[in-house]
Length: 214
Image (cartoon, rainbow, N blue to C red; front, top):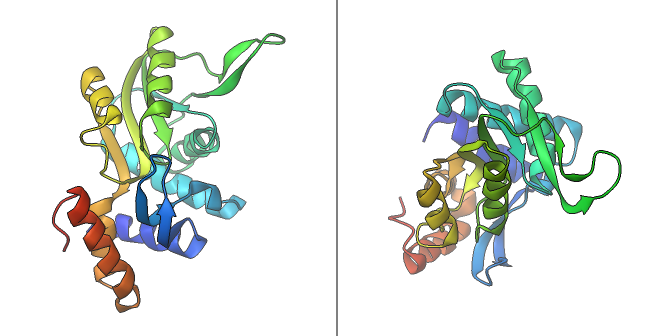
């Protein structure tokens, strides 16, 4: 596992954003772990998280692009990542986000920030059932722009046969992640303190066909 992924997972655990136990996901599935980007709630934590996103984008997304953050968690992620791209990689990119409720005064509409133009990279925390992703893709395409990639902090790798996978395939949008489920298994296997969590994760992987555990 590359060092940047190990560093990110360690950071997520220390911040309480990555927890182990028993959790019910939005889909209703029981999971032995939970990732919540809302736990990166200090200025220093958000800045460090954005550094990881920006490094992944700089490494994986070529050409010109802007950022889009789906409401709600994608909003601070897009703004902070735009700053990190400028600060760390010399890339001054535009960003935008949406409201979940339309506004009929002032500038109106559901979009805030730069106009959606050209290639747009969607920045979010995770991909689950795909409803938020579908809404983001629809907004981008309705504006005449192109969804160029989706970048998340943690790819649970559970979307291979669901709505999100079908959507990404239909629109030919690549999914990139700072770290993936398989990286998380490797991270846990390297630390004896996580022995119990690793056993539950391996069982989860086997039950849901998420690939061979290390």
